[in-house]
Image (tube, rainbow, N blue to C red; front, side, top):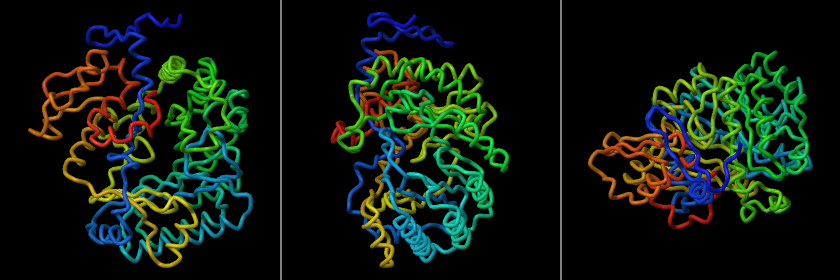
Length: 463
């Protein structure tokens, strides 16, 4: 039976039971906080970091630095209403072809600045990266292999829309060396798919999975969502069961972020059809329980993995990381972002390319980096970022290990409210997020965010 507004939620752990009252839970769930795929977060990047800054940071990378590459393709055949990505619909082929040429230009620029460096992770995101087509995918991949040393490449991943996958595309991906695919599913319920503009039957996704495995691409991720229009608890439970039946290695369960002030196409979603905070909490809880019952282990805030998967192992051993693609085993020294809006991370700080394709294209075609903003890290940023990453990955942090002698609990008064709500337990310098507090992990991380008070209203709700 579902809890009423006054019924406490009882959470069992090895420690004594913890009670969080639904009234307090709803108040926490409605708070606005970042997703913490970086710290500081992207809204705090400024134009103080320009192309010359970025070129200098690249040149300063040690010769033995391990790199990750991220390529952003900001085009789809049409926009799904829920989407929060930097993308737009491409009605004609010409813009996509021109964009592929600019990617080649930027790869050349990066090679000139870096030399041929070792890459351990490569990720294609979007948008829909496969919109480039087999010929351009092959061409860009070949150029990357010329510009970078891919001999130690551990993971070559791409995000795919199952509606846009053919056997020919799958064969091209296998030729390129792709060994991990993330499939955007969101929900299998017809009325939800209709409401978000993404008609995608289960059989279509299953066929894509079969093609991938037949081609030797066995590392498969599936992305699900809760909080979508006209979505019920039964819908998310059924979608979780169907997704699990495809035997992916990893699943992600994201909460839909309704931010129509940032993504104007989301205004086409009827806000009255969106689940409220209590329903979102229940959807996330039930979907998580289904996935755990299917044999997956919970990783961090919103990921699930097979127990023997590298992500699950990293979570158990304390070596999990978090970046702009979510939870990862990537331990590279720098992330190089390629494409419009792509974000890079270097030891000195963050950089971001122009988000609009026109500005990005003009820059790289003229032979200069398209960097428009970023942030040079201070020592305080590094310490807080390390604390936030460990909380987001391990659900616990020892302040004395991360930042010995820097802070005491008195410096973070907001923790007392989370302690009183049963979200966290504090013992000396150690902060532990309780299992009942997992949905509010971002709130615990936000306690250590020195930038948040300046723009709290620009973020999505916590759950």
